[in-house]
Image (cartoon, rainbow, N blue to C red):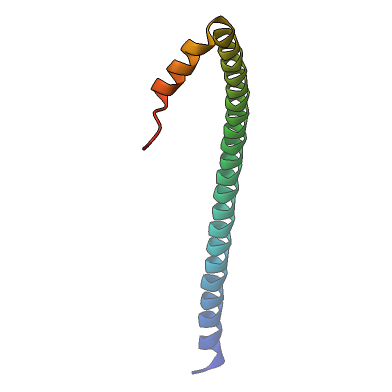
Length: 94
């Protein structure tokens, strides 16, 4: 096969190889962009959930404080009734 026939084939193959490299690079870049966007979305979700958890902890602390205050009030009114209520609510296992 003379060189005059080989050069057009080599040129065509080089063009296809270059096109394949460009397509592959574009795919990788697009995939990286998608993964980056997904990571940012997950981070925002995690931040939002962390804020919700902090709010729930604060609410729980307030509820526990209110319960302690109510127990003190009930105990000061009638300690025997409160003890009876606690025994009825928490039966011991025999």
